[in-house]
Length: 136
Image (cartoon, rainbow, N blue to C red; front, side):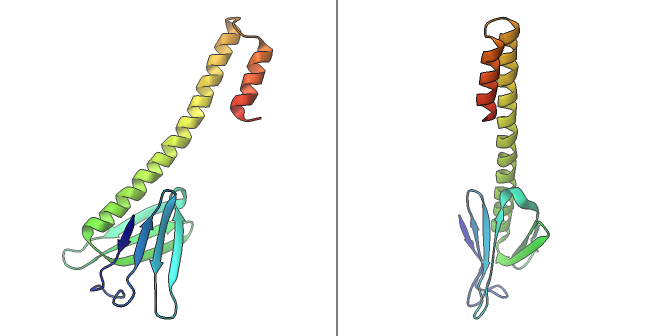
């Protein structure tokens, strides 16, 4: 998804700022006549997102990650809220997927242990399945 700052906002007259939301992170491009700035942030490394939405004028979004801050201005209130929500949703999904994967391996190991205790599979079978689950 691509968001482009308004050309009516300060600093965006000739070359407006662009924010690209991708599956693994976001990229902020602040072009310039002779020198531009571009930063890519992985969702996993974003510490916080702050937005400033004044009553009149354009909104600002600031991304903080690993000691780096990047601020972009010239977006509508709805755009910065949408960007912030997308970042928070993707961070949450990333954490849930990682947490869910570790739970499913732990659940599988528990089930296998129960099968060993019940005498359905041998301890050698358990060890082999454990190695497969843990990727060894």
